[in-house]
Length: 477
Image (cartoon, rainbow, N blue to C red):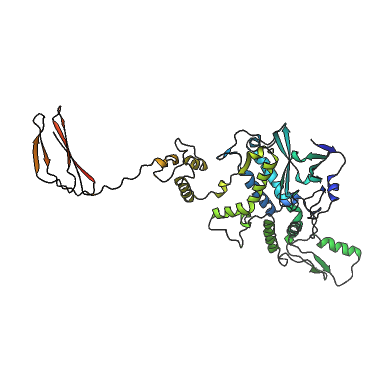
């Protein structure tokens, strides 16, 4: 619920408190110095700062990259985690956070304020305990206030100041020293940004005047007021584009400003670009500053890993921490959590991905359908089980694999002796059995006669001195 104080100026309230980095016990918290003024004598706003090309590039890079990374809602289980199927927080980031914005627009707006102001705020609307909408607030118009162990948020509008309870605000906090509010890069980088703006203004003025430096006109005699005004009117608007200047009557021009090349204008602007990239912790090559720069590693994958680790990860963790602690109830925090998926940033070339996926599948870490999902391919039947290199058998069948039989030992049996004849009680069937030379037990001879076909099958089994059997089977028709 919001309380409105009509006629109360938020800026006046905030100006009553100092900008010290030390923690305060109570009162309003501000994100940095109370003014954007600087020694360059240039006053600027967030809109003016965004007109600096390097600021625009840094803010856009961080905002669009963080805003487009998938944010999943997971449910903890006894065996790990699964993606939550039905939870209102999932609808915020997958369907719509409010009636006016898409999930992408919402995340980009919040991230842009976090990058510029060091803080991002959104009003949480609930129906009972269920979240129904989350709407961003202007960071420059929002000020946290601490009273005892309670924090309220004061939001200034043209209709007055609205006061929100802590549980009604989603607050993304940047780097700070008190845990209540993040530092504003716009305020703490006022000197750097002011110098950049002043440099750009000087360059623009130099070009608008056709490169004409300011100076004085001198003469060898004293002029009256009329002559002085006439001379000023003649030469005041002369620019380099007017062609050749003609000075007559003893008039001499003496420049008093420093030419742009003497001021090292280009070098100064190049230095400011690196300074701004340093403020936002963005590698300068990612904003097309390739002068005197080298790539990290040998390819784009290593560059993306460096960018993800040192630039993006703090923003991703702040998003996850704020959502987990402020959009889930205390009881839900034991069961649900959110986490970004960053695999898209680490996507390597086709050969490297093929080698990685092959290793993961063969070692039972990925299923084939999980690999197909990462490659934006539809699942196939029978590819949801983890497999290993042992004949690519399912992991739950590895214990049933048959052992390889040991090689059959060599027998010391000789059954190539002359045959002996005997007659069995069968229709005209004569069976011959050999004399078997054996070093141990005598052989066993089995004869099977099929009366219907007249076939005879003789099996001779003998044992060598080590006890290993040797069987010879003969079949006659």
